[in-house]
Amino acid sequence: MRLGYYMRRDPEASLVADSGGRVVGFMMGELRSGEFGLEEPTGWIEVMGVDPDLRGQAIGRRLAEEMLAHFKRRGARSVRTLVEEGTPGIAEFFTALGFEPAGLTPFVKKLE
Image 1 (tube, rainbow, N blue to C red):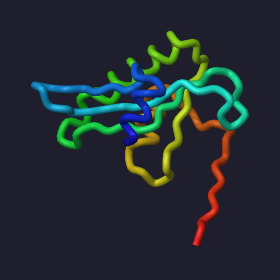
Image 2 (tube, helix red, strand yellow):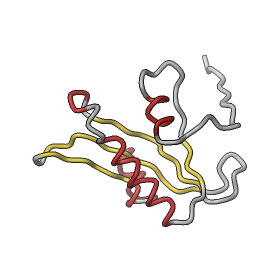
Image 3 (cartoon, helix red, strand yellow):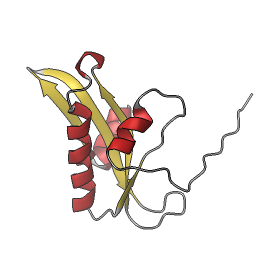
């Protein structure tokens, strides 16, 4: 269902990396405006993954570079993502791509 959502919203922002006909990485996102009070078109990287056995081979970087180029072609002047604290390697991955912490603070309320 999630793949269908992104394919309907922004099909060119659903990327797959393959090697020998086997999926080795993916990245999904979309271009939105009006989200969190951000009126200008903003790219959002929502979901990504790289085969753990193939990490360190720039698969994620190449997917991200294509995603960033797509958002730029569509008029975005910034790209955002959210990273769960304590998730190993993810914050470092985005920092290496030039991302930096933003002024948005997530809030959550547990429903019991």
